[in-house]
Length: 285
Image (cartoon, rainbow, N blue to C red; front, side):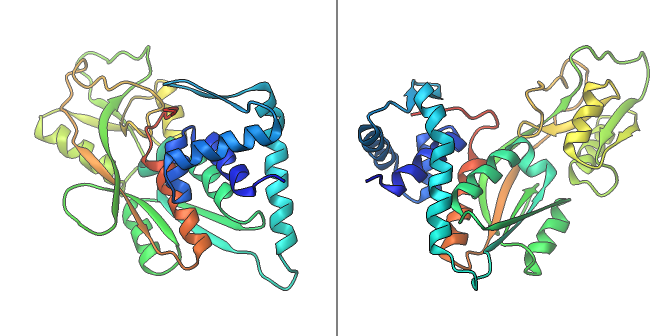
């Protein structure tokens, strides 16, 4: 008989790209995850995962088993669910600049940690709006970007802001810095404008986006320069020094959360593991 907890840890390891992160999400330790996966492979008589110091990859058998594993867990949870029980809801509010490219990993990890019929609601906004949403009880967890003071919440990581432009972008001679941002009200834009002002660098709004995804598309389209953290920059390097722009400060990425049920606590652990990992995390054990 297959141990369902081993199956769940297998899925979490793949979703988070790391046995350590999977252990954090499951509230256990890495050696337990490693042992559980070995037991699962022994039970199946198949090697599911290839591990190296930098990579975790599914084997061919692992690729075949992964959808079966998800279906197995879903059917198990469906068998435990009765029609008169409402589905569990988990609400996440997040600042786009705080969660960046880790959003998809966070959603995958939360899905793997919650019952199959759970409803996940994600809302995005500026950090101050996200914090207000959490304070009003509309969100079970909130991810914000905090600059300067404040001691509430759990610091998940420090994220360095930098000036990001398209690889082939070149500035115009004696022109004001064309700023790409989320527009008025964005804390990261405020920091960028403040630092430019202190350095006596002229700037202008060149492109305003409704999300960091659209903002990045504007950058890649050559619309101008964006202040972005490593977590959101999709691998673009900081070219501030090269372009003669002032250095930008780092910010804390902070989690605010309340665990109303054990399932919510599990989802929050998975969220922490996904967001606290490196932006291109494939660090495997």
